[in-house]
Image 1 (tube, rainbow over the protein chains, first blue to last red):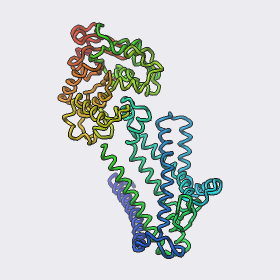
Image 2 (cartoon, rainbow over the protein chains, first blue to last red):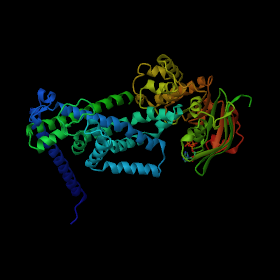
Image 3 (tube, rainbow over the protein chains, first blue to last red):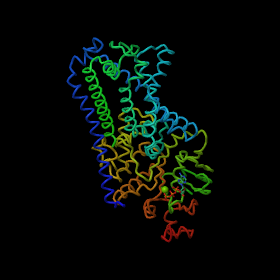
Image 4 (tube, chains in turn yellow, cyan):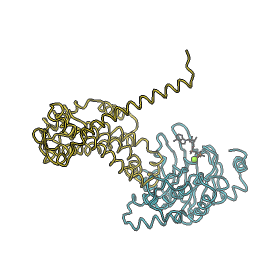
Length: 278
Length: 253
Ligand SMILES: Nc1ncnc2c1ncn2[C@@H]1O[C@H](COP(=O)(O)OP(=O)(O)OP(=O)(O)O)[C@@H](O)[C@H]1O
Ligand SMILES: [Mg+2]
Protein backbone atom coordinates (compact mmCIF):
# COMPACT_ATOMS: atom_id res chain seq x y z
CA UNK A 1 0.00 0.00 0.00
CA UNK A 2 1.31 3.47 -0.84
CA UNK A 3 0.62 6.43 1.37
CA UNK A 4 0.31 9.67 -0.51
CA UNK A 5 2.53 12.62 0.34
CA UNK A 6 -0.15 14.54 2.16
CA UNK A 7 -1.01 11.70 4.51
CA UNK A 8 2.60 10.92 5.35
CA UNK A 9 3.15 14.60 6.00
CA UNK A 10 0.26 14.55 8.45
CA UNK A 11 1.48 11.41 10.23
CA UNK A 12 5.00 12.83 10.55
CA UNK A 13 3.66 16.08 11.95
CA UNK A 14 1.55 14.18 14.44
CA UNK A 15 4.48 12.04 15.62
CA UNK A 16 6.80 15.03 15.99
CA UNK A 17 4.20 16.92 17.97
CA UNK A 18 3.61 13.96 20.28
CA UNK A 19 7.34 13.56 20.88
CA UNK A 20 7.79 17.24 21.64
CA UNK A 21 4.78 17.39 23.94
CA UNK A 22 5.89 14.25 25.78
CA UNK A 23 9.37 15.64 26.40
CA UNK A 24 8.04 18.96 27.61
CA UNK A 25 5.47 17.23 29.83
CA UNK A 26 8.08 14.99 31.45
CA UNK A 27 10.53 17.82 32.03
CA UNK A 28 7.85 20.08 33.33
CA UNK A 29 6.42 17.53 35.75
CA UNK A 30 9.86 16.74 37.19
CA UNK A 31 10.64 20.37 37.78
CA UNK A 32 7.13 21.08 39.08
CA UNK A 33 7.31 18.11 41.44
CA UNK A 34 10.59 19.28 42.93
CA UNK A 35 9.55 22.91 43.18
CA UNK A 36 6.19 22.08 44.76
CA UNK A 37 7.79 19.83 47.34
CA UNK A 38 10.90 21.95 47.79
CA UNK A 39 9.86 25.59 47.82
CA UNK A 40 7.84 25.32 51.06
CA UNK A 41 11.07 24.17 52.75
CA UNK A 42 12.95 27.28 51.73
CA UNK A 43 12.90 29.77 54.56
CA UNK A 44 15.21 32.46 55.81
CA UNK A 45 16.71 29.96 58.22
CA UNK A 46 17.17 27.40 55.43
CA UNK A 47 19.20 29.94 53.50
CA UNK A 48 21.29 31.33 56.33
CA UNK A 49 21.85 28.53 58.85
CA UNK A 50 24.41 25.77 58.44
CA UNK A 51 23.09 22.18 58.41
CA UNK A 52 22.51 20.73 61.90
CA UNK A 53 22.09 17.13 63.02
CA UNK A 54 23.54 15.78 59.72
CA UNK A 55 21.12 17.96 57.78
CA UNK A 56 17.93 16.91 59.51
CA UNK A 57 17.48 20.46 60.71
CA UNK A 58 19.17 23.80 60.22
CA UNK A 59 19.79 25.20 56.77
CA UNK A 60 22.21 24.71 53.93
CA UNK A 61 24.14 27.99 53.91
CA UNK A 62 27.54 26.28 53.97
CA UNK A 63 26.54 24.19 50.96
CA UNK A 64 25.36 27.24 49.05
CA UNK A 65 28.66 28.98 49.71
CA UNK A 66 30.63 25.82 48.86
CA UNK A 67 28.77 25.33 45.57
CA UNK A 68 29.28 28.92 44.50
CA UNK A 69 32.99 28.95 45.32
CA UNK A 70 33.82 25.55 43.80
CA UNK A 71 32.03 26.63 40.63
CA UNK A 72 33.72 30.02 40.65
CA UNK A 73 37.17 28.45 40.99
CA UNK A 74 36.43 26.07 38.13
CA UNK A 75 35.13 28.78 35.81
CA UNK A 76 37.86 31.28 36.67
CA UNK A 77 40.57 28.70 36.00
CA UNK A 78 39.05 26.98 32.97
CA UNK A 79 37.74 29.98 31.02
CA UNK A 80 41.07 31.68 30.25
CA UNK A 81 42.71 28.37 29.34
CA UNK A 82 39.71 27.34 27.24
CA UNK A 83 39.45 30.63 25.35
CA UNK A 84 43.23 30.73 24.97
CA UNK A 85 43.28 27.27 23.43
CA UNK A 86 40.39 28.18 21.15
CA UNK A 87 42.21 31.34 20.01
CA UNK A 88 45.35 29.32 19.37
CA UNK A 89 43.44 26.74 17.34
CA UNK A 90 41.54 29.28 15.25
CA UNK A 91 43.88 32.23 14.87
CA UNK A 92 47.44 31.14 15.38
CA UNK A 93 47.73 27.82 13.56
CA UNK A 94 46.63 26.37 10.31
CA UNK A 95 44.91 23.01 10.19
CA UNK A 96 47.66 20.53 10.87
CA UNK A 97 48.34 17.34 12.72
CA UNK A 98 48.86 19.30 15.93
CA UNK A 99 45.50 21.07 15.77
CA UNK A 100 43.76 17.82 14.92
CA UNK A 101 45.38 16.13 17.91
CA UNK A 102 44.35 18.96 20.23
CA UNK A 103 40.81 18.98 18.90
CA UNK A 104 40.55 15.19 19.08
CA UNK A 105 41.81 15.22 22.68
CA UNK A 106 39.33 17.91 23.66
CA UNK A 107 36.50 15.99 22.08
CA UNK A 108 37.50 12.73 23.77
CA UNK A 109 37.89 14.46 27.11
CA UNK A 110 34.39 15.89 26.79
CA UNK A 111 32.97 12.38 26.60
CA UNK A 112 34.73 10.90 29.62
CA UNK A 113 32.50 10.16 32.65
CA UNK A 114 33.00 12.74 35.36
CA UNK A 115 33.94 10.14 37.96
CA UNK A 116 37.17 9.61 36.01
CA UNK A 117 38.01 13.27 36.50
CA UNK A 118 37.10 12.81 40.15
CA UNK A 119 39.52 9.95 40.50
CA UNK A 120 42.26 11.91 38.77
CA UNK A 121 41.59 14.93 40.99
CA UNK A 122 41.67 12.74 44.06
CA UNK A 123 44.99 11.15 43.15
CA UNK A 124 46.66 14.29 41.81
CA UNK A 125 45.30 17.27 43.77
CA UNK A 126 44.11 15.67 47.00
CA UNK A 127 46.90 13.16 47.57
CA UNK A 128 49.91 13.95 45.38
CA UNK A 129 49.80 17.74 45.75
CA UNK A 130 48.63 17.28 49.37
CA UNK A 131 45.77 19.74 48.89
CA UNK A 132 43.43 17.43 50.76
CA UNK A 133 39.67 17.48 50.32
CA UNK A 134 39.18 21.13 49.64
CA UNK A 135 37.34 23.70 47.59
CA UNK A 136 40.55 24.18 45.63
CA UNK A 137 40.93 20.46 44.77
CA UNK A 138 37.27 20.29 43.82
CA UNK A 139 37.37 23.51 41.80
CA UNK A 140 40.49 22.51 39.89
CA UNK A 141 39.04 19.09 39.12
CA UNK A 142 35.86 20.71 37.84
CA UNK A 143 38.00 23.09 35.81
CA UNK A 144 39.62 20.17 33.99
CA UNK A 145 36.22 18.58 33.53
CA UNK A 146 34.66 21.64 31.85
CA UNK A 147 37.72 22.68 29.87
CA UNK A 148 36.84 20.63 26.76
CA UNK A 149 33.35 22.13 26.65
CA UNK A 150 34.69 25.66 26.88
CA UNK A 151 37.32 24.99 24.22
CA UNK A 152 34.79 23.56 21.82
CA UNK A 153 32.09 26.18 22.22
CA UNK A 154 34.62 29.02 22.10
CA UNK A 155 36.26 27.60 19.00
CA UNK A 156 32.92 27.33 17.25
CA UNK A 157 31.97 30.86 18.27
CA UNK A 158 35.27 32.29 17.05
CA UNK A 159 35.04 30.43 13.75
CA UNK A 160 31.69 32.03 12.95
CA UNK A 161 33.11 35.57 13.23
CA UNK A 162 33.20 36.96 9.67
CA UNK A 163 36.69 36.98 8.15
CA UNK A 164 36.00 40.58 7.08
CA UNK A 165 36.13 41.73 10.72
CA UNK A 166 39.69 40.47 10.95
CA UNK A 167 40.63 42.17 7.70
CA UNK A 168 39.12 45.44 8.93
CA UNK A 169 41.15 45.12 12.12
CA UNK A 170 44.40 44.52 10.27
CA UNK A 171 43.65 47.22 7.72
CA UNK A 172 43.31 49.74 10.54
CA UNK A 173 46.84 48.99 11.63
CA UNK A 174 45.86 46.81 14.56
CA UNK A 175 48.30 44.13 15.61
CA UNK A 176 47.16 40.54 15.53
CA UNK A 177 46.45 40.53 19.24
CA UNK A 178 44.53 43.81 19.04
CA UNK A 179 42.52 42.48 16.12
CA UNK A 180 41.62 39.36 18.08
CA UNK A 181 40.68 41.13 21.29
CA UNK A 182 38.92 44.11 19.69
CA UNK A 183 37.12 42.67 16.71
CA UNK A 184 37.02 38.88 16.97
CA UNK A 185 36.33 38.16 20.65
CA UNK A 186 33.55 40.73 21.12
CA UNK A 187 31.68 39.20 18.20
CA UNK A 188 32.26 35.70 19.54
CA UNK A 189 31.27 36.61 23.09
CA UNK A 190 27.65 35.37 23.07
CA UNK A 191 28.77 31.93 21.93
CA UNK A 192 31.59 31.82 24.44
CA UNK A 193 29.28 32.82 27.29
CA UNK A 194 26.90 30.09 26.24
CA UNK A 195 29.67 27.53 26.72
CA UNK A 196 30.51 28.98 30.12
CA UNK A 197 26.86 28.78 31.22
CA UNK A 198 26.71 25.14 30.12
CA UNK A 199 29.86 24.49 32.12
CA UNK A 200 28.50 26.20 35.22
CA UNK A 201 25.51 23.92 35.00
CA UNK A 202 27.76 20.88 34.91
CA UNK A 203 29.80 22.05 37.92
CA UNK A 204 26.72 22.82 39.99
CA UNK A 205 25.18 19.45 39.16
CA UNK A 206 28.27 17.32 39.70
CA UNK A 207 28.29 14.91 42.67
CA UNK A 208 30.65 11.95 42.43
CA UNK A 209 33.73 13.86 41.32
CA UNK A 210 33.11 16.54 43.95
CA UNK A 211 32.78 14.07 46.81
CA UNK A 212 36.15 12.60 45.82
CA UNK A 213 37.91 15.96 45.70
CA UNK A 214 36.08 18.52 47.84
CA UNK A 215 34.77 16.07 50.45
CA UNK A 216 31.42 16.33 52.15
CA UNK A 217 32.06 18.45 55.23
CA UNK A 218 29.09 20.39 56.57
CA UNK A 219 31.10 23.22 58.16
CA UNK A 220 31.04 26.69 56.71
CA UNK A 221 34.23 26.89 54.60
CA UNK A 222 36.70 29.50 55.79
CA UNK A 223 39.07 29.48 52.81
CA UNK A 224 39.57 27.69 49.52
CA UNK A 225 41.57 25.11 51.46
CA UNK A 226 38.53 24.08 53.51
CA UNK A 227 36.58 20.98 52.52
CA UNK A 228 32.98 21.54 51.60
CA UNK A 229 29.79 19.78 50.62
CA UNK A 230 28.17 21.25 47.52
CA UNK A 231 24.40 21.43 47.21
CA UNK A 232 24.19 18.55 44.76
CA UNK A 233 26.26 16.37 47.09
CA UNK A 234 24.22 17.42 50.10
CA UNK A 235 21.03 16.59 48.26
CA UNK A 236 22.45 13.22 47.23
CA UNK A 237 23.49 12.29 50.77
CA UNK A 238 20.24 13.49 52.34
CA UNK A 239 18.17 11.45 49.91
CA UNK A 240 20.36 8.38 49.71
CA UNK A 241 20.79 7.93 53.43
CA UNK A 242 17.18 8.85 54.09
CA UNK A 243 18.21 11.65 56.42
CA UNK A 244 15.54 14.14 55.43
CA UNK A 245 13.58 14.01 52.20
CA UNK A 246 12.07 17.40 52.99
CA UNK A 247 15.44 19.09 53.17
CA UNK A 248 16.57 17.15 50.10
CA UNK A 249 13.69 18.62 48.15
CA UNK A 250 14.44 22.06 49.52
CA UNK A 251 18.04 21.78 48.37
CA UNK A 252 17.03 20.51 44.95
CA UNK A 253 14.54 23.32 44.47
CA UNK A 254 17.16 25.87 45.42
CA UNK A 255 19.59 24.23 42.99
CA UNK A 256 17.11 24.60 40.16
CA UNK A 257 16.40 28.21 41.06
CA UNK A 258 20.12 28.95 41.28
CA UNK A 259 20.77 27.56 37.79
CA UNK A 260 17.82 29.49 36.38
CA UNK A 261 19.06 32.71 37.98
CA UNK A 262 22.59 32.20 36.63
CA UNK A 263 21.21 31.60 33.15
CA UNK A 264 19.00 34.65 33.19
CA UNK A 265 21.72 36.82 34.73
CA UNK A 266 24.36 35.89 32.18
CA UNK A 267 21.97 36.28 29.29
CA UNK A 268 21.03 39.74 30.47
CA UNK A 269 24.69 40.70 30.71
CA UNK A 270 25.40 39.46 27.20
CA UNK A 271 22.32 41.12 25.76
CA UNK A 272 23.27 44.42 27.31
CA UNK A 273 26.75 44.09 25.82
CA UNK A 274 25.37 43.19 22.41
CA UNK A 275 22.84 46.02 22.49
CA UNK A 276 25.75 48.41 22.62
CA UNK A 277 27.13 47.03 19.37
CA UNK A 278 24.29 45.97 17.13
CA UNK B 1 55.69 62.27 -15.07
CA UNK B 2 56.10 65.76 -13.70
CA UNK B 3 54.30 65.05 -10.44
CA UNK B 4 56.27 63.52 -7.57
CA UNK B 5 55.12 59.98 -7.07
CA UNK B 6 53.99 58.76 -3.67
CA UNK B 7 54.00 55.13 -4.62
CA UNK B 8 56.14 53.55 -7.29
CA UNK B 9 55.31 49.99 -8.30
CA UNK B 10 58.17 48.24 -10.04
CA UNK B 11 57.89 44.91 -11.82
CA UNK B 12 55.10 43.54 -9.62
CA UNK B 13 54.00 39.97 -10.19
CA UNK B 14 51.37 38.47 -7.94
CA UNK B 15 50.31 34.85 -7.61
CA UNK B 16 47.61 32.92 -5.77
CA UNK B 17 49.20 29.49 -5.58
CA UNK B 18 50.15 28.79 -9.23
CA UNK B 19 47.76 31.33 -10.71
CA UNK B 20 49.29 34.65 -11.73
CA UNK B 21 46.86 37.54 -11.31
CA UNK B 22 49.18 40.54 -11.72
CA UNK B 23 51.77 40.50 -14.48
CA UNK B 24 54.93 42.63 -14.57
CA UNK B 25 53.12 45.75 -13.40
CA UNK B 26 54.90 49.11 -13.44
CA UNK B 27 52.90 52.07 -12.19
CA UNK B 28 53.57 55.38 -10.48
CA UNK B 29 50.91 56.87 -8.24
CA UNK B 30 51.33 60.65 -7.90
CA UNK B 31 51.04 62.44 -4.59
CA UNK B 32 47.88 64.44 -3.81
CA UNK B 33 46.11 63.07 -6.84
CA UNK B 34 43.28 60.60 -7.39
CA UNK B 35 44.32 57.65 -9.50
CA UNK B 36 41.58 55.32 -10.70
CA UNK B 37 42.51 51.76 -11.58
CA UNK B 38 39.72 50.26 -13.63
CA UNK B 39 39.02 47.21 -15.71
CA UNK B 40 36.62 44.30 -16.14
CA UNK B 41 35.95 41.74 -13.40
CA UNK B 42 38.85 39.60 -12.22
CA UNK B 43 41.47 41.95 -13.61
CA UNK B 44 43.37 41.87 -10.33
CA UNK B 45 42.46 45.34 -9.09
CA UNK B 46 41.41 44.30 -5.60
CA UNK B 47 44.56 42.22 -5.42
CA UNK B 48 46.66 45.23 -6.40
CA UNK B 49 45.06 47.45 -3.74
CA UNK B 50 45.50 44.79 -1.05
CA UNK B 51 49.14 44.46 -1.97
CA UNK B 52 49.78 48.18 -1.50
CA UNK B 53 49.33 47.91 2.29
CA UNK B 54 50.31 44.25 2.50
CA UNK B 55 46.88 43.01 3.50
CA UNK B 56 47.79 40.41 0.91
CA UNK B 57 50.11 38.94 3.56
CA UNK B 58 46.98 37.49 5.17
CA UNK B 59 46.06 35.39 2.16
CA UNK B 60 47.44 31.89 2.51
CA UNK B 61 49.34 30.76 -0.57
CA UNK B 62 49.74 34.24 -2.05
CA UNK B 63 53.17 35.49 -3.12
CA UNK B 64 54.66 38.33 -5.08
CA UNK B 65 57.77 39.44 -6.95
CA UNK B 66 58.94 43.00 -7.50
CA UNK B 67 59.00 46.17 -5.45
CA UNK B 68 56.51 48.71 -4.20
CA UNK B 69 58.21 51.92 -3.13
CA UNK B 70 56.38 54.17 -0.69
CA UNK B 71 58.24 57.47 -0.54
CA UNK B 72 61.16 55.62 -2.05
CA UNK B 73 61.22 52.80 0.51
CA UNK B 74 60.29 49.25 -0.49
CA UNK B 75 57.34 48.14 1.62
CA UNK B 76 58.46 44.53 1.38
CA UNK B 77 61.80 45.24 3.08
CA UNK B 78 62.21 43.05 6.15
CA UNK B 79 62.62 46.06 8.46
CA UNK B 80 59.23 47.55 7.51
CA UNK B 81 56.72 47.61 10.37
CA UNK B 82 53.57 46.24 8.75
CA UNK B 83 51.07 47.68 11.23
CA UNK B 84 52.63 51.11 10.75
CA UNK B 85 52.50 50.66 6.97
CA UNK B 86 48.78 49.92 7.20
CA UNK B 87 48.22 53.07 9.21
CA UNK B 88 50.01 55.06 6.51
CA UNK B 89 48.15 53.30 3.69
CA UNK B 90 44.53 52.94 4.77
CA UNK B 91 42.03 50.76 2.95
CA UNK B 92 38.25 50.90 2.43
CA UNK B 93 36.78 47.60 1.28
CA UNK B 94 34.16 47.11 -1.39
CA UNK B 95 31.71 45.64 1.16
CA UNK B 96 30.88 48.30 3.78
CA UNK B 97 31.87 46.53 6.99
CA UNK B 98 31.15 48.27 10.25
CA UNK B 99 32.35 46.46 13.35
CA UNK B 100 29.72 45.44 15.92
CA UNK B 101 30.23 48.44 18.17
CA UNK B 102 29.02 52.02 18.36
CA UNK B 103 29.57 54.58 15.62
CA UNK B 104 32.02 56.43 17.81
CA UNK B 105 33.97 53.30 18.75
CA UNK B 106 34.25 52.23 15.12
CA UNK B 107 36.03 55.45 14.22
CA UNK B 108 37.98 55.65 17.47
CA UNK B 109 39.34 52.12 17.23
CA UNK B 110 42.31 52.96 15.00
CA UNK B 111 43.54 55.98 16.98
CA UNK B 112 43.04 54.23 20.32
CA UNK B 113 44.89 51.10 19.27
CA UNK B 114 47.57 53.28 17.78
CA UNK B 115 48.27 54.62 21.25
CA UNK B 116 46.15 57.77 21.48
CA UNK B 117 45.35 57.97 25.18
CA UNK B 118 43.61 61.27 25.83
CA UNK B 119 39.83 61.06 25.58
CA UNK B 120 39.46 64.55 24.21
CA UNK B 121 42.09 63.95 21.55
CA UNK B 122 40.26 60.79 20.43
CA UNK B 123 36.92 62.62 20.36
CA UNK B 124 38.47 65.42 18.32
CA UNK B 125 39.96 62.96 15.86
CA UNK B 126 36.64 61.15 15.50
CA UNK B 127 34.75 64.37 14.83
CA UNK B 128 37.32 65.52 12.29
CA UNK B 129 37.18 62.20 10.45
CA UNK B 130 33.38 62.14 10.43
CA UNK B 131 33.23 65.69 9.10
CA UNK B 132 35.70 64.91 6.32
CA UNK B 133 33.71 61.86 5.25
CA UNK B 134 30.51 63.96 5.22
CA UNK B 135 28.87 61.80 7.86
CA UNK B 136 29.03 64.12 10.86
CA UNK B 137 25.70 65.85 10.32
CA UNK B 138 23.94 62.50 9.94
CA UNK B 139 25.29 60.97 13.12
CA UNK B 140 26.42 63.69 15.52
CA UNK B 141 23.42 63.14 17.79
CA UNK B 142 23.71 59.36 17.96
CA UNK B 143 27.39 58.55 18.15
CA UNK B 144 26.71 55.96 20.84
CA UNK B 145 24.27 53.92 18.79
CA UNK B 146 25.37 50.73 17.04
CA UNK B 147 27.01 51.31 13.68
CA UNK B 148 25.02 48.47 12.16
CA UNK B 149 21.90 50.66 12.25
CA UNK B 150 23.35 53.02 9.67
CA UNK B 151 22.25 52.74 6.05
CA UNK B 152 24.60 51.19 3.49
CA UNK B 153 25.78 54.57 2.28
CA UNK B 154 26.34 55.83 5.79
CA UNK B 155 28.25 52.68 6.67
CA UNK B 156 30.54 53.15 3.72
CA UNK B 157 31.19 56.75 4.77
CA UNK B 158 31.83 55.39 8.27
CA UNK B 159 34.44 53.07 6.79
CA UNK B 160 36.05 56.05 5.09
CA UNK B 161 35.97 58.00 8.37
CA UNK B 162 37.55 55.06 10.14
CA UNK B 163 40.47 55.20 7.74
CA UNK B 164 40.74 59.01 7.88
CA UNK B 165 40.97 58.81 11.67
CA UNK B 166 44.27 57.00 11.21
CA UNK B 167 45.63 60.16 9.57
CA UNK B 168 47.01 58.07 6.72
CA UNK B 169 49.05 59.32 3.79
CA UNK B 170 47.44 57.12 1.17
CA UNK B 171 43.83 55.97 0.96
CA UNK B 172 42.87 52.89 -1.03
CA UNK B 173 39.22 52.64 -2.00
CA UNK B 174 37.87 49.45 -3.53
CA UNK B 175 34.59 50.30 -5.28
CA UNK B 176 33.49 52.47 -2.38
CA UNK B 177 30.18 53.27 -4.03
CA UNK B 178 29.08 49.89 -5.28
CA UNK B 179 26.38 49.59 -2.61
CA UNK B 180 25.26 53.21 -2.76
CA UNK B 181 22.50 55.30 -4.23
CA UNK B 182 23.38 58.25 -6.50
CA UNK B 183 23.05 60.86 -3.75
CA UNK B 184 25.40 59.07 -1.36
CA UNK B 185 27.74 58.46 -4.26
CA UNK B 186 27.79 62.14 -5.10
CA UNK B 187 28.52 62.96 -1.45
CA UNK B 188 31.43 60.57 -1.32
CA UNK B 189 32.85 61.78 -4.62
CA UNK B 190 32.67 65.34 -3.35
CA UNK B 191 34.51 64.35 -0.17
CA UNK B 192 37.19 62.58 -2.18
CA UNK B 193 37.81 65.64 -4.33
CA UNK B 194 38.47 67.60 -1.15
CA UNK B 195 40.51 64.88 0.51
CA UNK B 196 43.04 64.70 -2.29
CA UNK B 197 44.48 68.02 -1.10
CA UNK B 198 45.92 66.12 1.83
CA UNK B 199 46.05 62.53 0.72
CA UNK B 200 47.07 60.35 -2.16
CA UNK B 201 44.02 58.45 -3.28
CA UNK B 202 43.83 55.26 -5.28
CA UNK B 203 40.37 54.11 -6.20
CA UNK B 204 38.84 51.16 -7.98
CA UNK B 205 35.92 53.11 -9.44
CA UNK B 206 32.40 51.80 -9.50
CA UNK B 207 32.00 52.74 -13.16
CA UNK B 208 34.12 54.24 -15.92
CA UNK B 209 31.99 57.38 -15.57
CA UNK B 210 33.00 57.67 -11.95
CA UNK B 211 36.66 57.48 -12.92
CA UNK B 212 35.99 60.26 -15.43
CA UNK B 213 34.34 62.46 -12.82
CA UNK B 214 36.93 62.30 -10.08
CA UNK B 215 40.24 60.85 -11.24
CA UNK B 216 43.28 62.88 -12.27
CA UNK B 217 44.91 59.81 -13.70
CA UNK B 218 43.59 56.43 -14.74
CA UNK B 219 45.11 53.02 -15.28
CA UNK B 220 43.35 50.32 -17.28
CA UNK B 221 43.93 46.71 -16.24
CA UNK B 222 42.87 43.61 -18.09
CA UNK B 223 43.41 40.09 -16.77
CA UNK B 224 46.39 41.12 -14.68
CA UNK B 225 48.05 43.24 -17.37
CA UNK B 226 48.33 47.01 -17.17
CA UNK B 227 47.18 47.97 -20.64
CA UNK B 228 47.36 51.73 -20.49
CA UNK B 229 47.73 54.61 -18.09
CA UNK B 230 47.83 58.38 -18.21
CA UNK B 231 45.86 61.55 -17.55
CA UNK B 232 42.15 60.84 -17.43
CA UNK B 233 41.24 63.21 -20.26
CA UNK B 234 43.94 61.86 -22.56
CA UNK B 235 43.17 58.19 -21.96
CA UNK B 236 39.44 58.70 -22.21
CA UNK B 237 39.57 60.89 -25.33
CA UNK B 238 42.45 59.28 -27.18
CA UNK B 239 43.08 55.76 -25.92
CA UNK B 240 46.27 54.39 -27.41
CA UNK B 241 45.33 50.74 -27.09
CA UNK B 242 42.40 49.16 -28.91
CA UNK B 243 41.43 47.16 -25.87
CA UNK B 244 41.12 50.34 -23.79
CA UNK B 245 38.99 51.86 -26.51
CA UNK B 246 36.79 48.78 -26.68
CA UNK B 247 36.29 48.77 -22.94
CA UNK B 248 35.54 52.49 -22.74
CA UNK B 249 33.01 52.27 -25.53
CA UNK B 250 31.40 49.30 -23.83
CA UNK B 251 32.29 46.82 -26.52
CA UNK B 252 33.35 44.21 -23.99
CA UNK B 253 33.69 43.68 -20.27
N1 LIG C 1 42.23 34.63 -2.14
C1 LIG C 1 42.29 34.23 -3.41
N2 LIG C 1 42.72 33.00 -3.72
C2 LIG C 1 42.77 32.58 -5.01
N3 LIG C 1 42.43 33.32 -6.06
C3 LIG C 1 42.00 34.58 -5.82
C4 LIG C 1 41.90 35.09 -4.49
N4 LIG C 1 41.44 36.37 -4.56
C5 LIG C 1 41.27 36.62 -5.88
N5 LIG C 1 41.60 35.56 -6.65
C6 LIG C 1 41.56 35.49 -8.11
O1 LIG C 1 42.43 36.46 -8.61
C7 LIG C 1 41.87 37.10 -9.75
C8 LIG C 1 41.85 38.61 -9.53
O2 LIG C 1 40.92 38.89 -8.47
P1 LIG C 1 40.68 40.35 -7.93
O3 LIG C 1 39.69 40.24 -6.85
O4 LIG C 1 41.99 40.97 -7.61
O5 LIG C 1 40.07 41.04 -9.22
P2 LIG C 1 39.24 42.37 -9.35
O6 LIG C 1 39.80 43.10 -10.51
O7 LIG C 1 39.18 43.09 -8.06
O8 LIG C 1 37.83 41.79 -9.73
P3 LIG C 1 36.37 42.37 -9.42
O9 LIG C 1 36.08 43.29 -10.54
O10 LIG C 1 35.50 41.14 -9.45
O11 LIG C 1 36.39 43.02 -8.09
C9 LIG C 1 40.50 36.49 -9.94
O12 LIG C 1 40.59 35.54 -10.96
C10 LIG C 1 40.20 35.85 -8.64
O13 LIG C 1 39.40 34.71 -8.80
MG1 LIG D 1 37.56 43.61 -6.75
